[in-house]
Image (cartoon, rainbow, N blue to C red):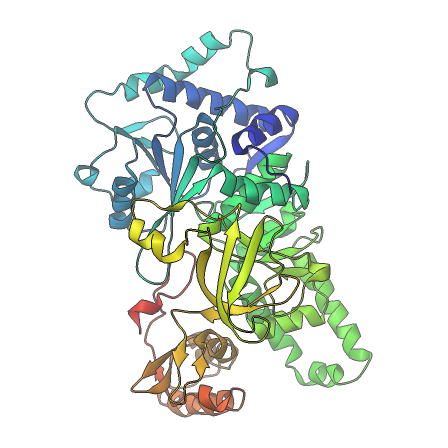
Length: 551
């Protein structure tokens, strides 16, 4: 697969798609064309030049997804500077640490986040600016930011007296080997590391998306995943902008009600989502329907079951806008029961696999070729192997190398050496198997794997997937306590209240859940006890449970 220069992809795309719609704010309905996007990038480049910003300098960006967020990101990378996107959900102390650790010269931040930041704790920045407009929040040592910001439009008109045209687009000449982004992970282990992504890493993802036609010219995309996260960034922003797609930015918390309404209105041609969305729809809408007596009876009758499944499939496709090629699920494992059901009704979905350290994609298969239980085939620009004597049958740690693999962790040689070999192999930390054609099957994280008293490997994620489908269970975590498996459970209090159960009833109910679960798992995976949690588990911004807090 041919990998193009990352920056030049956008130089070409913005010129070729000049008159097409590029970015729409879902809340206001305001749309910017590729011409407007390119003009705003040019104005920002003038601002960078006048304040003395150099290619390779770091620019931090923290705020919720917005049209302006996209413009700042694209202006930074096309200038040749290094973008440091920070998830808006990080706490102020983490945001401050990332800005300092990255050595950012500029910090673009949303007002709602800035009000919680201590300016004196920012050690290296020359200035802090509002993400929404050229408003300077903080300026150090008279760097001229405020005056440069006021003069941007005048200087733009002076530089382009006849107006800005496609022929005026000239972006930085930087090799794909150079650093483009530092993305700080939001892992479940308690440590946030700066993943260094080069032009090659990002172009590897984008060029795969382009050549696979995940997005295409004038296609529609609805961006509702955090763009500061590698998954949403690569396939809800970078790939669509590379081919002339029209991106609508949701700009709201994607609750099922809000999201389904937006999907119906935007009618995207591709849906990029995390498992939680499909799992909630299955649990709250589909499962209650197919559990009804009459429907359950119908599903037991050959031919009639296909009729019911066909109707469910049609409704689900309509709920996602009705005009998409497929739904790509990534970011976390998809619940097996949900996956089996979606496959049974022939819903057009596929499950990919990746990590921030690969910017993010490692494997993917189009839905028509997708194998249930897998995470797709290894990309053509990547290699994969499983550290096992029998990779097809005996799980081992998955290792990958290729165009998408990061340069390393920023200012963290020790952490880099732990995961990157001198031959370029990246230890993913995930355990699984691999078929001869490169298809990967993930079993769990090596760090979370537990060992039974008889020496059997236990993957708690697999038990939790079954447990989370049980009645009255909202979410769960399986841990080892005193040599025995314990299930920490946060109950589904909505269901408990709906059925009028008292607090005293939960004990016997959960004991029944434990007994039912133990019939579904191997003897060495059986749960010895259940511990009820009073509150939801603490999670990372991408909604993964922070396991280290409960082990």
